[in-house]
Image (cartoon, helix red, strand yellow):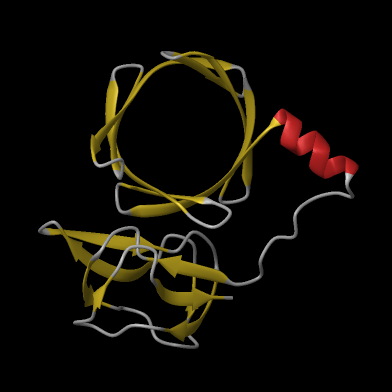
Length: 165
């Protein structure tokens, strides 16, 4: 099965060969993808290198937290892409990005302010969960348009924390 995946605007062609092998843009990989706890945390081993990922299915995209960076991924199979194209083209990209909590936790720090210009990779918020502090970073350039939480707030998974335009 072939999937077309967009991660932060970059498109990848992912072919699932079998349960242990995939190809990304024609490059083959040996993979092991195992849930660690209740389907939220996954152990991913790619060609012998280990990664931990917090994966959450949003309304239209997957939110993946790895190494303190939050990635937004849109995944569709070939059939869905052909169907969408036949119905009139691409899905409109949202102008506003909503940073959502990838897990329940406590807001430790918010190093940005409303109206502040930010660049891709800037730390937007520090969230403590399971005794670990996670820096949630911006997936793109923009301006912080609205803070929806404050330092010290407890938040739930998928709760909107702030918005970037």
